[in-house]
Image (tube, rainbow, N blue to C red; front, side, top):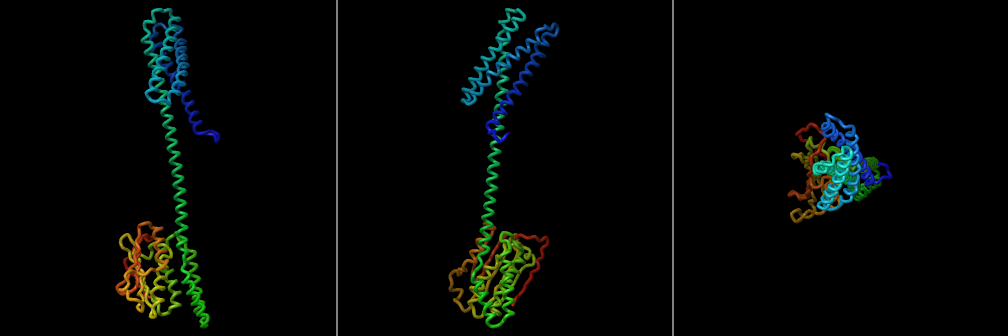
Length: 390
């Protein structure tokens, strides 16, 4: 198909090619069959010299008469099936009658047998059979071409929908990635302000070494948070390392008031989790528990594998100097940190996750996350690693 040709023009061109091919093949077949079954067999003892030419002449007349049926069939094709069938039968009957008259008249002139008209019914039956065969072949091929054309349209529509679906999935993936990046880069400005104030205080008190170390840790943490791809997942071991880097910066501010405990199963260290998942939760614990307590407190991170799920818990010891935990009817809001984590989990896992926030009986807040367990590890170890950072 050339670029200038419309699909409908191509279909018409293919239909015409099919018609002429089948027209030649079918009438050639009728010619050979007539010659072998009637002319040659019937005249095997005495073969008149005019028989081959008569057979060729009759098939040629039938060939041209069938060309008259084609426009009639094409015009009636769009009519209702009952009317179409009636028109086809009438046209076939008329054309068969004309062909019968031509054949019989030709044969009478060649042989001189005037009594041949008494056999008109038999000759007409043979003509009717030939043109009914031609009509069945023509309609069958036409239906086949239409079916093939419809099949091509269905494939074209399916391909179009597939391309649209690919575009939609690509757009959704881009939107999802953009959403993850937006959520991922929502750094709490309080953390930066507090850290910079702490560095300023260290410089003011001439603690240059501590200030320099804090700047290095801050730059490492910011580099990690800004360069890590928010779409890709990292191992839990890497995520805990990032949280410890953040808490190490906070320990410069709170000194001995901040303690961190890790209770992580060895087999969970290779589990895949969203990058920077725990940092907002640790930041909430620092902000709402450690910073408000004169005696400080402890942040505990726990990781377990429970069947096909990874269970992550991060909790704090609360604020003993604040209101009693039993007086609070519901957990206090933790700002954008918790909602940020919830939105990222929803984007990555749809409904295949859970995040709960509860108050512990001993005081403090407990955040519990369950996500599908995904790991690159091939071997698991049921041993448990416990680490206490003072």
